[in-house]
Image 1 (cartoon, rainbow, N blue to C red):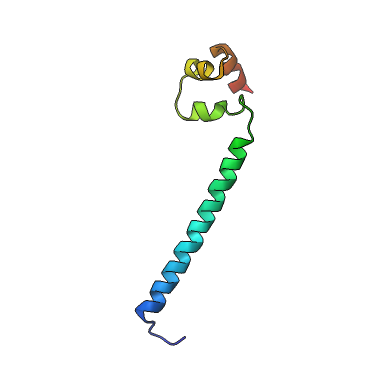
Image 2 (cartoon, one colour):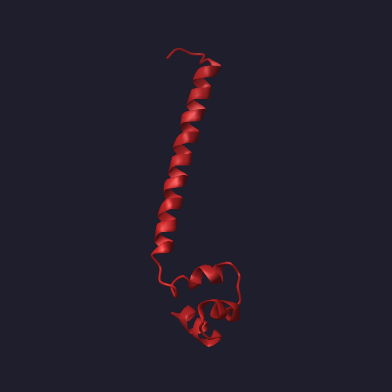
Length: 75
């Protein structure tokens, strides 16, 4: 390619780069969703804790006691 590049060449490079980045992000998100979906109900509790719920609220969501939530966190 000769220099200087035209605007169309630069635009094409930017578009290709953006498309590749978007594909990578989409693939990573799909992998994360698949991993999360494979968790058991109790293993999924970490997602409740990460969202900022209190142990009592996590226990209520999972149908277990607050003490059980604390014990599972200690593992």
